[in-house]
Amino acid sequence: MGEQNAQHVDNWVHVYSGKVRDLYESEQTSLSHLIMVVASDRVSAFDQILEPAITGKGKHLTTLTNWWFDRLDVPNHLAAEVEVPAEVAGRATIAKKLEMFPVECVVRGYISGSGWQEYQATGEICGIKLPEGLTFGGKLPEPIFTPAWKAPMGEHDENITFERVVELVGAENAAKLRDLSLKVFKQASELAEHAGLILADTKFEFGIDPNNRNDVVEFNGVSGTITLGDEVLTPDSSRYWSRAAWDRGERKESFDKQIVRNWLAENWDKHGTPPVLPAEIVAQTADKYAELVERLTSEVA
Image 1: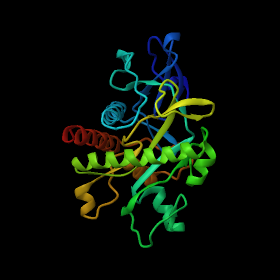
Image 2: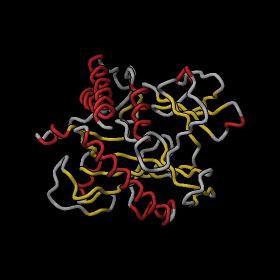
Image 3: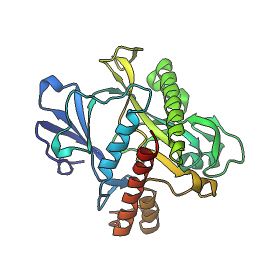
Image 4: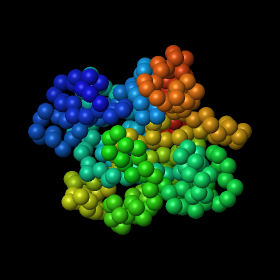
């Protein structure tokens, strides 16, 4: 992504833009251990950034990430020593730099998405044998850890087995990532239930905080504490369903950009430049993000 997508912020230097977020480093050497993550309103689907953006999306993602960090019993990357600049207030997080693991820690409590496709083909997800006869959107016997390898820019992430995670990060780290992911998923699922929501699946990203020396592990020559980073339990990283709708047998309407994906799948052959999203699709998607934030933050203490 180019500089043109990143907003100028005084005293911070833009260093990278992903599909949705922009990263900045402080101009002050005393703050070189920090990074600022700005969530934009950009929306992507099928590896393409789409037009127009979804109004308010960046604020919704940031609000929800911070709300979850306040409630999860696991070290996270938030840093309180510097205030978020006024130019990006509500959309930005000041975070500690972490040595990130090259693994997306996906947990599934229900079967859908790529997991459903893999199960239909093999009866397994990421090497985990599942019972026969599961249906789309069905609840799994217990949540499962189904990791993915974080591919370099321009390549697709790849579902991998736990054994492959061990090869990538070592046995001790792999076990800790799995156990932490399942622990956080269980806690988040229970909180979501209080809001009448099902957390069907999610992905976490962890790294090592070299300045935290509790329960020290090592990876890539860096030692410290395994710490939850990136966004967490947002509609961009998670699949939420209405419990009432699920009980009625409705399994496809989720609180995220699925509306965008569905419209794009019907109106684009995935070749060339994707079409501009209609105003009603943008509005419906914005409403879904807003509704999820409202339901969680107002109905869960």
